[in-house]
Length: 302
Image (tube, rainbow, N blue to C red):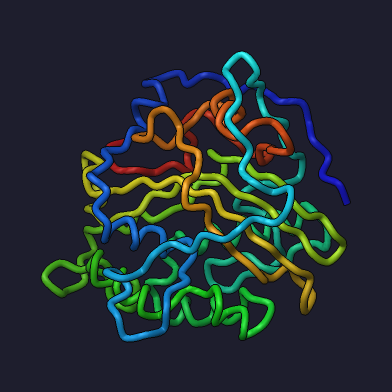
């Protein structure tokens, strides 16, 4: 079922401080250990050997299927605003939940895309820090146990993330090893500031490319800066299949060299820049796409 697209609509400009200033992130030098950890949040495909996953993990680089290679950036004079996909709301859809993960999507193209987005969002959320939530979500997300073993989020990666960010297995930030209610986990994937492209659209199989920013870090709730928050842009290709009455993941591959906005220190990008970076061949905006700050963008210092 083809997704109906609407003509691009222009968001009203902010009435206070410009969004780009309010949303600016202080990006630390990307040391190899941290990059490996951040990439692991989205894909979680690490070896099951005894090596430390933070030190040894490398992001998977998959060969995209024919016709799905990353489009070249177009010249600014050629760039246009991407069409908006009616009915595809990032972070919405589904009639059920497994903790933080949405489930029960409609057997439509829109439902499949929203399912893929749901998995991307939960993979970059604080959900997995809670061990019970991690176990339940991972058990439900994939088409088969074999697929989970191949592409699922590894326990040792989760353990390494907890240690790095000082979070316990109940999902509580720690200070000196003790739960600290003053701290907050800021992990989030912002699909409304990205775009998507459908690569395969079949009745029981849909493959979609997703481009979006994630932020990750732990800081005090009243933090005045984003010094402890990291920003990362990803381009990932997710395949979902209609199994057991829902769209479940059967493949997930991350590109090693995603398009990057001109200002990599901020989350909000304009619609025009997205078109320039991704090209206009099949790329679309979710229906709730934004190019200014929204209430969902809750970062320190606001």
